Image 1 (cartoon, rainbow, N blue to C red):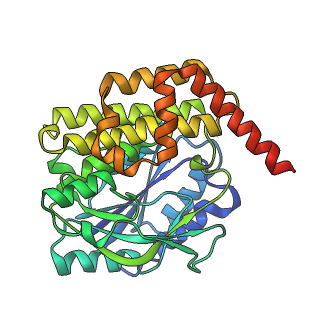
Image 2 (cartoon, rainbow, N blue to C red):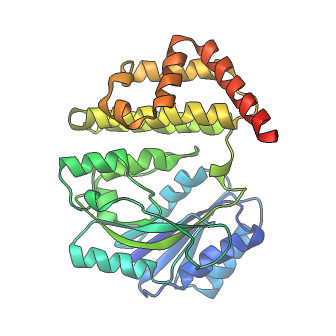
Image 3 (cartoon, rainbow, N blue to C red):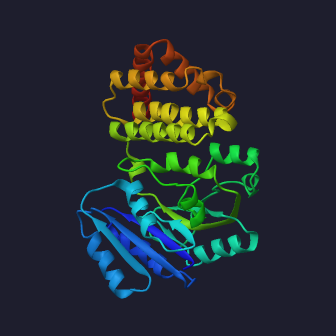
Length: 340
């Protein structure tokens, strides 16, 4: 079989989201492929919808289900265990793809000999195949046969995993998988997997449609999600250590870890959580300093982190309380100004 498309599904029946995704997948222009829909303990009627597609398209759709929620990482791992394709693709169940998506990605792979091929994506807020805002996912400088410098570029900015296809041998031979039972599993897997690509190519077209809606997990912030992001990076750190990646990529790993574990988490927590706790801010600072106490001298941190962010982080490293009070007052002042 040429391709296995893995779709993690959790409570996506509402507003026809799951139907639109599945319709786009069963309508692909390639013929030799399977769709592995993994029902991740949904509590709505997502499983019933998936069973309908399995009955209607028995040669294309296989449904896996289990009673305990494993989050997207666990669902993807279950899909990988069942996959029979030479190539693997992932699709979020509230997104969808162009009818020619996988035909174009596989053609590019076969023309170039690449083991991973990606594309761009379109941001949309309704169920349509009309292209909206196009986001370039990865760049031409990251493509081709990968040397150390290109691997560094991919480690730093791996891009979205769902817009790519992966040769299954690459995944299997290098024991690659996803963290389970947490959000942000791709934060760990994206950079780690990229270290094993040998030849990466891209189709510079928006073949994937990323649906922006209020119920998406990326549109609201909780302390649990912040802790999950931290945990994903801790897993990433341990994997890089155990796989011997630090000697060649220490500065890149340090910055990627700092960016996701600390910088993004710190500011998203302060801005997005209704009642942020000083205790959490203290733990976050203790965490980053236990892994990379000198992260502020990292050349990527100096170059790529914004000046205001660096100023506020320096304030926090001097005093958690001062940072916390200052940032809360700044947010309050911004809200008051917006009401005037």
